[in-house]
Image (cartoon, rainbow, N blue to C red; front, side, top):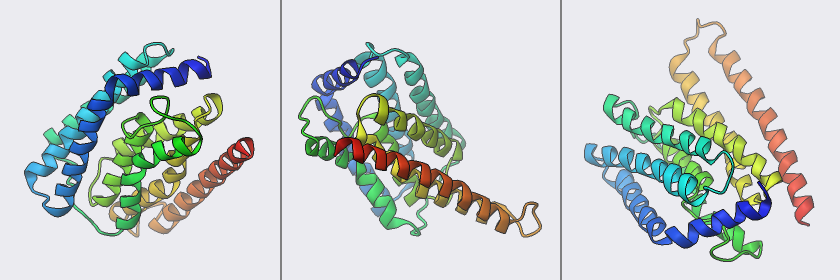
Length: 244
């Protein structure tokens, strides 16, 4: 797939679906506000089905329809379709509680607002509608989901976290191959988010007599995240050098 085909599919997507994207953004804003202010069981359940709808939209509206000219678009659609199914399953079993811990509020809010930084980044690069990134695209949706789960991280579905981390690594490759430095936003947010999620998991689930113990697991997590951080910093530095 060429750079031209990649950006043309983005332009087609924005041109055909901007009203739907606007509705999805407004719905997400309303449900997020309610989750912060009045987190009733109905609101929590509605948020899970909204996330299922959002992931399903990326699978069908973005990949299967707008990006049908791309190779392997069916594989990407399957990836996001699985994510949609996971949220429906999560509601059935009641795993993710959407209980706020208030430990990472500032970082979580920044991540939730990142989808709106994507189009601003495109504008700063000299792009214009419809050939520009938008708030309802795969990487921006991934950032919003990570931010939401970080804000309500008392008990989260780690399967979702691992899927989104995997997606951020896929997004990093697009920086090189298709000239989309906007996806560095997701890659840059991955490392601290990954560290915070798994640190909480270790603190809650590892006892002092566990082998390896909690202290060693924290150290291994810090080393892994530091290595990822160095790799991403090198990538960002290289991309800045190309842009300059």
